[in-house]
Image 1 (spheres, each protein chain N blue to C red):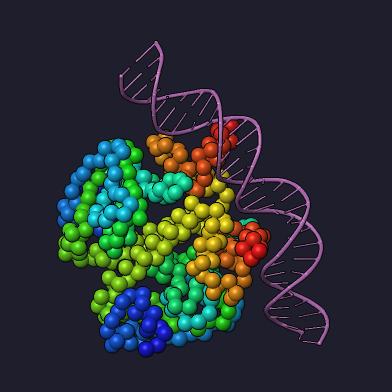
Image 2: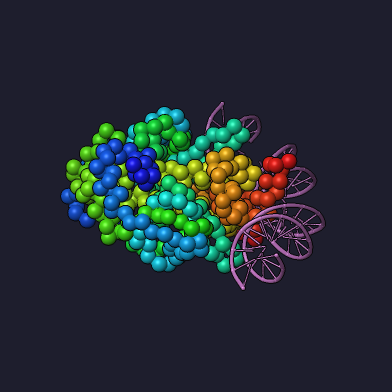
Length: 190
Length: 190
DNA sequence: ATATCGGCTTGACAAAAATCAAGAATTTAA
DNA sequence: TTAAATTCTTGATTTTTGTCAAGCCGATAT
C-alpha cells in the first residue's frame, strides 16, 4: 500500500483495498519546485492535492504585511476549499517552501469519486467537519492563550516543522512577529 | 412563508415550496428562558436548532477565565457541530442570553432530511464549507488585526448586537478584556 | 425608596508584544 | 569559495493590552 493510500485510510477509514485503489487512481502525481506557486489569490483553485512530501505555505499579502495562514505538510491535503467547492476566486496564495511531491485531483474529476466510492459524500462531510473543528480550536487558542502559550502548544505538536521551514512563517501563523517568536525560543532553550 | 422557511431558502437555496415545508416539518418549536442551558460541555449534543428569536452564547470555562467563542443570533443555526456529527462529548456550553425561540431537529430525525430533500447532503456540505470559510476569516483577523481593528470590523457588521447582549461577551469573542473593549468604545464615541 | 447585583467605566500600573535598527548566522547562488 | 541574500537574533524603545481596584450606573427586587 502506498503512503497515499495509507493516509486516505487514516483520514477516511476506507477499508476496502479495491476502493482505495479506485480512489487514488483518480489522482495524478505532480512535482513542485521550491518557490513554485500552487495557487495565487484571485485565481480559481481547481485542484485538491495530497502532499506526499515537502511543505506548502498558505498566505496572503495585506497592505502592510504578509500573513501566513497555515503551513501544509506531508500526509495532509492542500487546496483553497472555498474556491475549490464554490468555484470562486481563491482567497489564498499557496507556495512551495521546498520541493514538493503531490497527488492532485482536478475539480472536473472530483465528482467522479462518488461513482467509485459511493460513501464518499458522507466521508467528505465528516472530513470537512473535522477541519472545521480544528479551526474552532485555533480560534479558541487566540481567545484564550498568550503568544508564548500558543508557541509551546504548537511546538509540542509540530516539533519536526521547526527545523524544516523558515521560522518567520511559523511566527506569522501563530499570530506573532518573528522577534517575539525568537525571544520565546531564547527562553525555551535557556 | 415562515421566517424559518425564508432563512432556509437563503442559506440553502431550496426553491421548491413543498420541499421547504417537508424540511421544516421535521423541526419542532422550543422555548428557552434567559439563562437556560441549550447544551453543557461534556454532554452529547443531539440537536441542531434554528434561532427564530433571541441570543445564545457559546462558551467554555478555563481554569482562569470564561471564553465566549461566539454569540448566535436570529436566522442562524446553533449546535455543537463536532458533537452533533460525531456524537462525541460537546466541546462548548451554550446558554440563552435572552428568552429564545428555536426550531429543533434531533439527530435521530436528522437523517430523514435527505429522504424528503434528496439534495440535502450536497446542500449540507456547501453549508459546512461556508461555515469553514467564516472561521478562516476569523483566524485571519487574529493574525492580521489589532484588538481595535477587530472591534471596528465586527462593529460595522454587527451593530445591532451591541445594545442587546452584555458587551463583556462580545469583548471575549473578539479576544480582548472588557476593559480594553470599553476603552476602544470610549475613543469611538468621542 | 433603597439595597443589591450585574455590568460598565476609569485610573494607575504591569506585562506582553510590536517596532525599529543593527548585526550575526545561515543559506543560496555566482 | 566567496559574495549576496535571506533569515534569525538582540537591544532599546514604544505601543498595545492586561490586571487590579474602585466607583458608577441602571435594572430589579425587597
